[in-house]
Length: 130
Image (cartoon, rainbow, N blue to C red; front, top):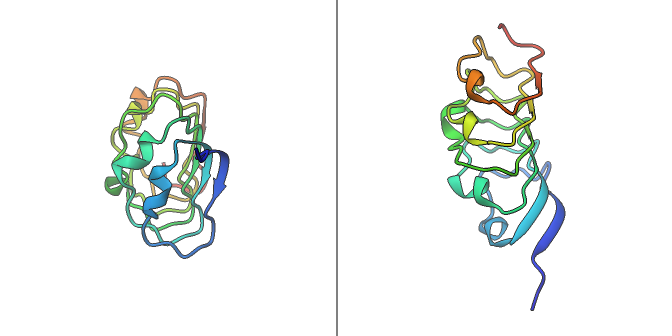
């Protein structure tokens, strides 16, 4: 059978407006780089990819309400820098293993919602108005 397990997948700078359906057919990906695209929303299915530890969604067109974060215990690093989030994404606490969160230049003016992200060890907030 075909092995659909990857250590890392980069779809960086591909002008993606939506995520390709083939992405969700993968059995396992540890590191996923979707930076520098035109993504405006992230489907629930992304958070269900098995073994996912690091997700880079920097420099897209994401707003906090379009992230659709769902329960996940494996993601340790999430980069959302350079997106017009406007606020801390809801349900961030559902990423139970999240240790590093990068929110540089995301138009965030308050930290409401981060208090529930109990595994968080490192938070990067440069170039915001908090």
